[in-house]
Image 1 (cartoon, helix red, strand yellow):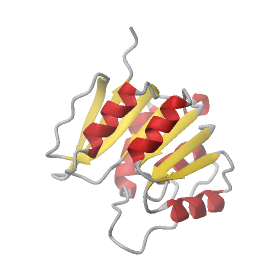
Image 2: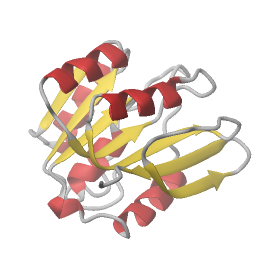
Image 3: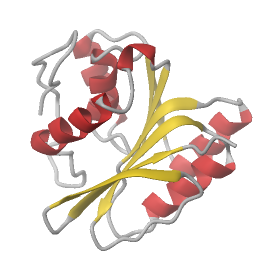
Image 4: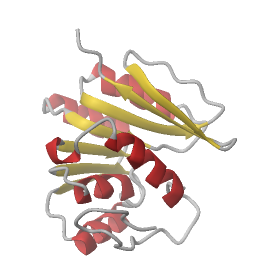
Length: 181
């Protein structure tokens, strides 16, 4: 697993030695960022949130491409995220360890919002849907939200669906945008 392009291009990321996490495959990540390049300008992206961050690859890729700051949330891999942040020499990162719902509520109380949110939870546990609902309820989204989930999961959201991409029979990525009234 590596950073594809930008100021940390080619940097190999530390990954967990167990199978409790499911990192986004490089080919899927490359395809996703190709789509995102047509939707946003990373150099104008002030804040990125990476929920269920795993290795931190999606948030780190965003910073490498020009995003100003990233916030990472995970329950078990914060040491790996910290190591990857240090390897990339990115000072503009905050890392939270714990329950995503509690941390999202905390961010909401701080009136934070994010230009780009990644959400890649364990599949088939309802966490993708719960994350979408919380982000909407807490008004955390200021731009796009990218949700990776199991292909069998059906998501509903008050956000506008911009793009849906299926990767084989197991993975779907949906990109949502906050509706402007």
